[in-house]
Length: 364
Image (cartoon, rainbow, N blue to C red; front, side):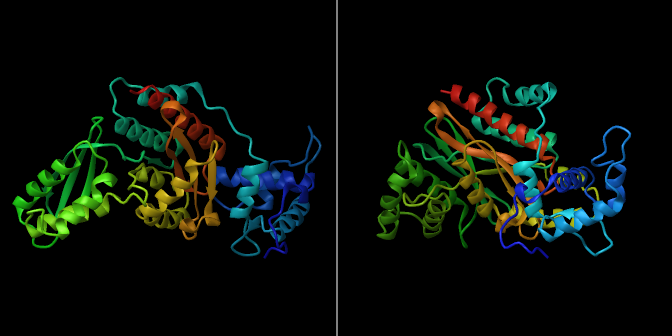
């Protein structure tokens, strides 16, 4: 239990405590298992040359002090220590030594993102996959809002009572949305609904035409079969057509299998199972990344700092990306267990965001 009523700072730690704490966190991030005093003693903390470092007894006393500050925890008194989320925050903010992104990693990111004639969607998809492959977590990319004028809308029927809504924008961008079909919908209603929306949305933003479309349906002037009308209304609601609300954002998540591959210990597997559940809560993830868009540079969320990760104890490293004239478009990053390799992931996310911004800024 911590005896502090507020978060401790580096000024609360003397040189010995800082060295022990830094070594514990770095060892935990590398191994994923609790760190004991015997392991720390072997690292010769505080020793210079052949001079001995701290004794196991001194290390244990220091670890107890760090635990009382709320920076370390343990399953039981004889177990090794783990950094708490509060401890990880202190480490990341004050003791983390960022590594340089290697030239090979930069070239790998550049090669995947800079291929000619890639659409914006493809670039963002590649960014998510690249981050997952290089960072050892799942890659997240929040795509830009699609609020431009539309050219065409089409509904494609799928099995399981679902349909794919294909939205073609005036600039050539194509967005696909999965929808659940209204009960009792007949196949011909899909084409009818698509033709109806295409005629009324061509050259317009969804928000501009939304009220007129809904009024036409409600007053019976739309001449639509009932289920087609329900499909149109549901589509407008799902796509966030209200001008008072932000449009629906597309969240690209890649690399879930990467999380399982990097589970070092059994306890990781349970946390990753909970993280998979977090990844299904897309609306909350989108809200999290929406908030990160306004940050300057890389932003880090550690464990319980965000209610979304209160059970899985996950960490997210995110950064905004921009388009032409520095227009804010979205955010991208990496999500994984709290023992992410922050020194490597932070510069990787930063570089990827900068590369995306450069590429999208060059697009017409």
